Image 1 (spheres, each protein chain N blue to C red):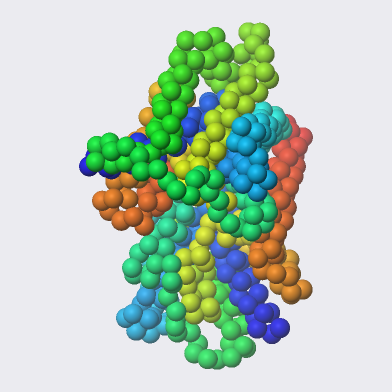
Image 2 (image 1 turned 180 degrees about the horizontal axis):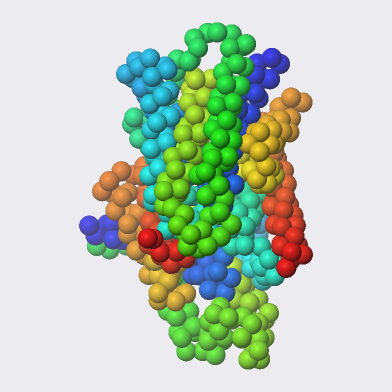
Length: 286
Length: 287
């Protein structure tokens, strides 16, 4: 029971970090992106390869992995910067599922078998250490999001979200902010990937399926642009509810698809409700 | 090279039927409906359930599956999408909702059929005819002929018939079409039913040709989107050209680069085609 609770806590942290990565885009520039899972995969695999194949010290490996994910985020931002709306979302879908297929096929990621025996960042420090690392990762990421939102850059990004043409006409540097958003989202997603690798000590392509984005995306939509901690708390809540079936001992074969159906149906209802409420507010304002 | 070409034509023909259905629907709704692929998978599974699990003749199971999936497609394209658009939902919301619908149907099929893949065809596959160094079975020849004939017929209907022109008019501007006296609801319904029937037909043909599993819906939705965007300048029937181009690219990756990267090629195609199609069309100029 303690191990299961710890597993659910780790899942909450990974999902929370991914939700924060999506939040950089969605609550920042207003773009709905679906590639942060691929960026988390880059972070996890870079850490796993450096730590197991090249015996890098874990801390150095983690830094390199987060940097690689941030760089990948920057490249993705550069590639999609001329897209908007559903075209942008679909293109990031392409990046996400394409990367998943690459993780499944490349020799360096050990194809579908994944990479095991990944060293922990803190050795065998026990459960207290694991909880501590979880909280530290979340604090780091949420602090980064909060600082960014309150900075001048965050204000410019908010202006770009509200009226892109208007903000540009007063000199807001759109491309620079698209790049910074990509970089920061990549770093946070990469942190999520590294956290997954060091706690599970095993990474496989299945960890980075696009359907895994359902919960983080749901958390961002439900949180509706509130504080970063709001996003994290909602993400944790959805994970706890979705993992509830495991606590009551339901069969994973049926519980998995049933949980996914329930989350997808709830997310669809929330998405429609949120949008309609927003439209009603906009209409009331005239 | 001959065998690569034959393989590309055979898989391109299946892609063409699915993409034609998507292109027809997209011409009016302009929605990247990721749930489109579930019509193909549902039709295949429904036909399997009726023909294999209940022992019905294909003369009964195929039309029944077509009718039921046609009704499902009609509901999605002619009822749900217009209602969501009227309510004010954005295209990106509809894209996400269609993805959620795809996941739900995929999971329902996985639970109902215990995640098993299905195959309705004969256990003993006929050797087929030798064509350009490759082999083509009678079923594959039927698929190729069907997709070419349907593509050509659709091209002529869209370009030459009054109904085709009405579909184009509603796709361009539904309000103007309504003012001009067109029965927009009827045209949307007709178009949606034709789109769903084409996709369902492709799903049933595919279930006789290769194994289907519930997760294939997403892959075929992406294939349909990429093919439609490649052939977009040629109109809805251009999806046939797009489907063959995509199939050739995929087959080249399969035979020349690495068989494992076949799906990655399709998804890379999605990204590249979207970036190319929508380059700088919606965004403010730099500087």
